[in-house]
Length: 490
Image (tube, rainbow, N blue to C red):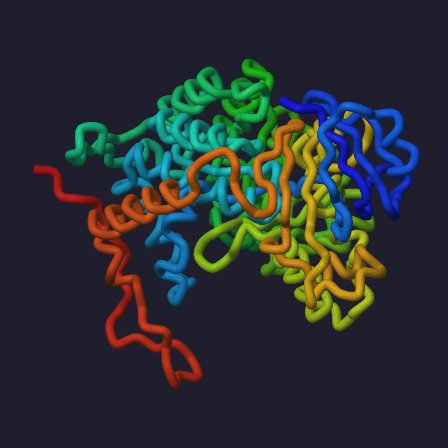
């Protein structure tokens, strides 16, 4: 590790004072930022450090994606034309056709996509509905992120009802069916925590992630008050066991939630999967009462563009809200600039108000607010002395980013992930001049391509690779869409 001095850039700190420093500099020793200021002030005080010339570039905190899915990078676009049953297609695929090598390959591809888009910390849920029965899945994904070099929040935990849950394992190359109990899912999650939590010099962390905070109601859509009434025995058991396990290992909790679930979860205040150690994704359709519960409990919320989550109500009541990719399937990138603009546009259209979520707030929601949702704002999310040296550098000398004024506006209105020039994590340069320095990107992508096609053939997913719909005003189908069945076990 070489001590670094970033010079002559425009530095957007996102610190407490939200400083924007022209001809700015960032001094890094080891894995920490030691000083942020002007180039004129810092250069004489940091002789001997390797100089990174940032002339014509923006220097910002590393971007943080607090919710995404492992596996999606090698399945993206498949079944994108049938969103009404998309989960019924991809979940059986993950539960019955994914191999251990698939998860390592996906880790390489997703880690590289995030790196090249300036994401220095990304959450990865193993599968669409979390799968923790085989700890090697999560361990292999973490291994890939360790090699790429960015930080990963690995999310593992119990699947939704019914329990036990059928899975198919391919450890020997042949399918073997197994019904996994809830306790086996918890044990699998604990095995992942024990194996990789805190590994790679702390860059890999594991959060406990049940599919939703209340498994007895619809796990993917809001539940009306007549359906979301009282917690069941299964609901209470899951909350208690997740809480016990999180306390045992000292890990945080992440999950999905929709309307009705927050109010129901709050019925069991002792074990509710709510609080400052929890961040919840989606929260579509939450009532004013439920928003008040999030505010009262200090629960964080993460929002991906789309869906009618009351994020303005949440923010106005003091709930911390971050923007996430929810990527990368069926049709989202890990590009946090695009995700932020999509979230802003959705709110503009929903409320018929183009003044909502100005660019400064958008940048906060993919840096410091996202770090806070992960419980890591003391370490990442801003350029502050003492914090980890996670830095994203954007090349502004491009037609679509010229003229270089009102830099936060320029960044959040026009920049895309491919404008990222250099990425530093824990003081290590992982990408410079858009060249990845940690892994052979072409070899990794070739490996990912092979594993993706192998999954397609095992699961029969060619049926869900549709034509582009040339000349059609709306997508139509000649045959009903049928989700993949589990493989035959001879």
